[in-house]
Image (cartoon, rainbow, N blue to C red; front, side):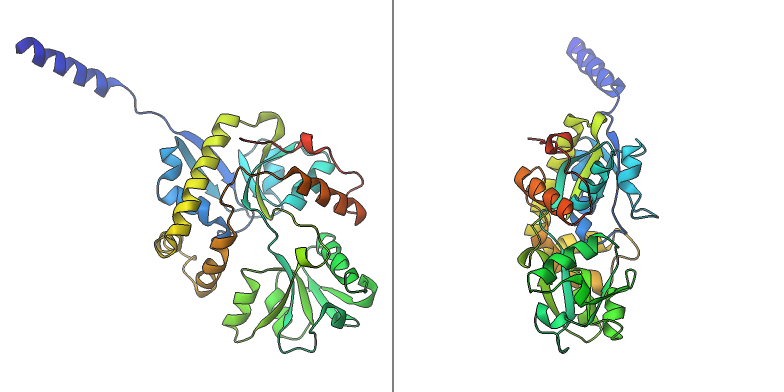
Length: 313
């Protein structure tokens, strides 16, 4: 018995001497301030799903929303949340980036007018003012949409309203806004006692694309770590879609400015849009949209998809 107790004690001491399994630190730069688009990331962190997969993930909101992919390309962070069109334009400029996963596998972008305005169809925008935020890209989307209705950009007046899309629309500064996210601006209008009429980009002349993706530095993609990250995101996504109320409680309490009326309304519209499989990759979609960017003059030549698409299966 004494020998057995000594053996048990020795084993216990040996186990106590073993270091706890270290979690791999990961820095993820967001594309914008934290919002329901990042639900899977926030829930994965708050519920310990990342930790379960051996990752210590830090989510960082950028001071400059244009900076995250460039910082990743420079090796100053591990991953960035970005957009398919942004990735393709940056890669065409020579930045060493790779798409490794997806958070929202469809466009969120849209063209919006007030429901009670004279604009009932795309053709009704002729001679009217349209607000935009991002020069070049918003114009490319709008141009394709107008062409689907027999118009061109010359038929409208473009006004840069920065990111005050709802304000510009409500104040009648413009008759419509391009670049409105379908899960946010319509809800923002509702909070202002107004209703919006929406035209989805992918239904009106623009090829479908992934809105929110994860990018990493091309030469240093850590496949094993990325697979863990995506597995955790998939697990968190499945859980929050099955438990939206509990997930909202976790999300809204994870930051002091998250529990507000706009996020609460956007939450219900955002969850169905989150990609169930963050590993999924449609190469043809990227080739088609790259051709669209070339046609619209945003890039000179479509980069080879093999150079910037990494399949994590």
